[in-house]
Image (cartoon, rainbow, N blue to C red; front, side):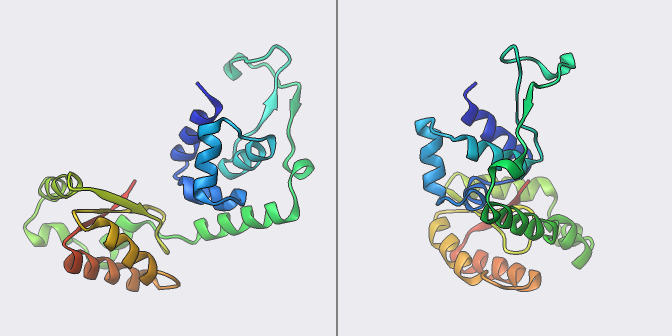
Length: 195
C-alpha cells in the first residue's frame, strides 16, 4: 500500500474530504490530488494529516512493524516542532468548524419527525430513486452547516452543484435545507447526504 492510499483511507474513515484536507494543508484540492498521483507527499503533509485525523506519526527502529506487537516508536513527530502558526490556525479553524456542524439526518428527524412515514415512501423506495438518479451522474459538495457531504444526483448535477455552492455561502442550516429542496425541484436532481 502506498502512503497516499493510507492517507485517503484514514481521511475517509474520519469523514474528511480531499477538498477539506487540501484547505487545511494550505493547498488547492487539485494540488493535493496531484501530490497523491506523483507520490510527492512531504513530511510536513504527513504531520498535518496526522493532526487532522488525530493520528500519531512515528519512526520505528526495525522499519515497518505492526503496532499491535506493542513496540514503541523510536521517534514520534511532535506537531509543534514541524508546524507553523499558520498551520495551527488552519487546523484550529477546521476543528472548530467541524465541531459546530450538525448531523443532517438527526436534524431532519428533529425538525420533521416521521417525515418518511408520512410521505408514504419507505427508505427502500427513496434509495431506488437515488440509485436511478445517481446512474445519470453525481457530484459531491461540502455542506455549509452539516457534518456530511452532500451528493447531487441526476442529469443536471453539475449545474445544480454550482448553484448550491453559490447559494449556501454563509447561510443557516434552515436556509441550506431549503436551498436543497429548491434545487431538487428546479434542476430535477435527487439530493442526499454522504455518510
